[in-house]
Length: 86
Image 1 (tube, rainbow, N blue to C red):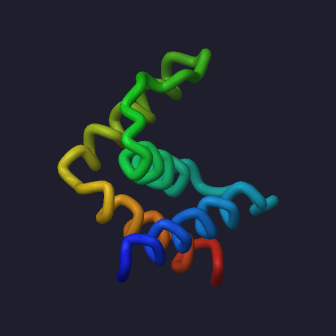
Image 2: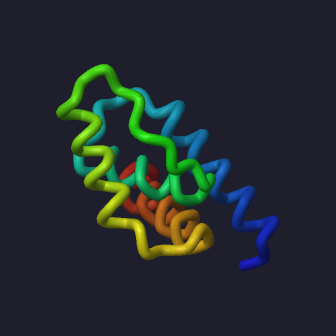
Image 3: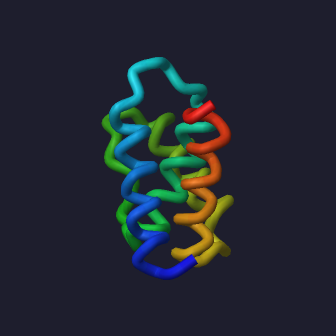
């Protein structure tokens, strides 16, 4: 997939998640969070006011730390297609 097409598909998948109104499972949200952060090269510490949530987010990032930006975008898109666009 070309870089421009990948970026466009990624942005569409992000919009799909942002517009989704039903509750999503926590494990799915954590995977999406990690892929999104890696895809956008945003490695700031999680910003929740709840330490436990920060710990879960940090753990999700650690688990996905060895993937590239491209892989993160592709994984995000695939997860949205599989779990949200059923």
